[in-house]
Image 1 (cartoon, rainbow, N blue to C red):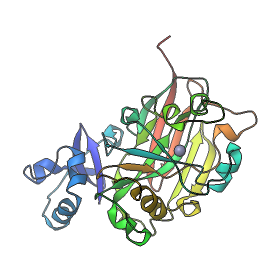
Image 2: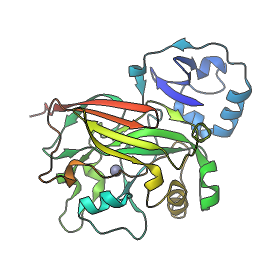
Image 3: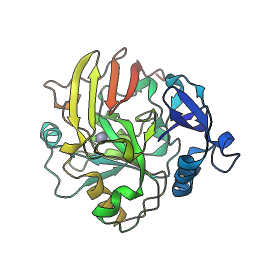
Length: 282
Ligand code: ZN
């Protein structure tokens, strides 16, 4: 099953058609997407058994984040070996977890404002929780996941690396629009192997990142077990699982985004397209 949010309403996507969840369920579920994740077991069993009827054609460009307002967003740093090496930072011995704040969430298309001179790309697979998870074992972890969505963890490296010596990643990755999610949430059963999802990023038509979640240092299951051992993961919470090598930071010299750059990111068959634009505030 695939879930999208269009016009701020949760939809079930089937091919080129979208079905409004609140209308189809006569108000039992939706239209707020977060409410689906809070009732994920009941919603998915309804969705798989109900006679949903036809949807209506939709414009993929109209898709917003499939989780418009998650209560918690976790980023994972240095979770692919080659990216850890290019970053010049030591290899993590346990997951390196940081927060991305909810005001940074935006959809899979549109402009990306360059708030600093050192904005970088990070394509990632993100998992969205479908049940509250606390002290979850690795073997059970995937059963707590509603689905996977494409993500871009845009990062202002200059702010991310402050203060020198003890960098705090969260603010540099939380400018408005720097957490791009969507276009759809794909349930784990739709993947041949949910632990082997291809992801890529190209900038101005040049492929810069290409990998698979099979190369993660800490797998999705390990991340959920680790984080849920510290705090409860709530329905709708998002974990961005880390980015592979090929970011601007790793280039010599770094080639950060400039106005007009076109960033195309893929996770599985999902595609995000962003255009970098100058910050108009000054
Ligand atoms: Zn990241």
